[in-house]
Length: 442
Ligand SMILES: C[S@@+](CC[C@H](N)C(=O)[O-])C[C@H]1O[C@@H](n2cnc3c(N)ncnc32)[C@H](O)[C@@H]1O
Image (cartoon, rainbow, N blue to C red; front, side, top):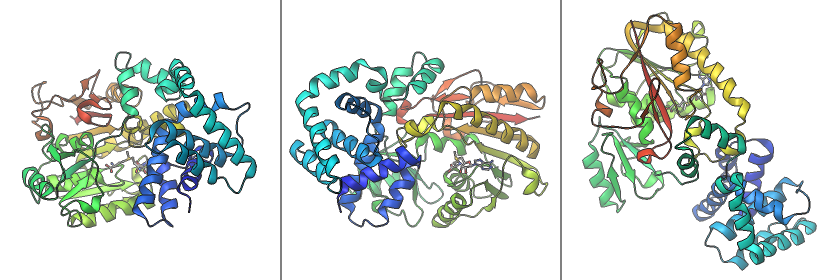
């Protein structure tokens, strides 16, 4: 097995067939047992997606005409990525990459020429790439423009953060242990980490580790979840006896956190339209020893699954562009299209409107996305508030007006206040890009 060839095939599933990188990698790993090989393939695939626009620009400078063969193009990108970004010896990177194309003799000589020319002309080619915005920032043009339009002052930082490797953050199950105690357990395994001050359940690791090496993982002592996502449960201000609806729940990270945060809820109903993703909710809850009512259903059509009993709390973690989590899923830069944003906005609106009647008077709906675009976030909530007389925006901070105190963000000053809600921009306090707004029902 040639690891470079496997990486190239995974990448062409993404580039040519529009498959997600996670799905394509999972599929490739079915036949690969070696942890070392898996790590190398993963590093190549994530790296090429992260740097795709830069590598593609450089490749175009090295070719007379575009490469039609998707696997060979992916191999060329894999080769260039090793030469520019990895500590692989150049001669090994070239020879192994060329070898990966042994079944296509024409491609062997082409790859050899491309990679050797790159090595000879590297300085000039990289300089040219630095002068081209799409290559220098390694993002598609439409996305650079969109981010610049929404966040003119922060755009460059956001774009640079999108290309970084994110930290691995753990959510300590505070129903079972404390962050301090868990930090001690990590220390005993020589895993360097720190507690995230403003979110009591969050621990940030200095370096990512395999989940199996986390003490007590199988017993549900911890889960992997970014700090930004861990703010949701606290913002819901959960109280004993409440009925809670998590309306786009899979794979269940926030649902589990809700149940860990308040053991005396009357019920948590978790809904998702995707049956296979719903199975992951079930697995996650099982590992953590938690229980919820799981419903496969369309959130935009509650009449097909709602029992008519109102909820005290609703979490709508809406389907979105996921532009706040590009650093975790760099293939989003390759797969997302400008026209998706408007379609997602329509879907978010339809779900928000459909579930509002399910909230009891005096109840609270938390609207969340892992997007940084205003269209999906503050503009969405602003329009909703304008159309619903019984909806009122509640503060996200205890000192910003009336409203209940919220444990998770009491001591925090995270995010940026907008027209409504609060936006965390990618990389802020090492977090993913996230948006939260709390809407109360009168
Ligand atoms: C951002 S993810 C939710 C993440 C989840 N809340 C968590 O913390 O693990 C959005 C989810 O919305 C689901 N979804 C999309 N359209 C939906 C619909 N019309 N009804 C219900 N779920 C939907 C997707 O299947 C996806 O699992």
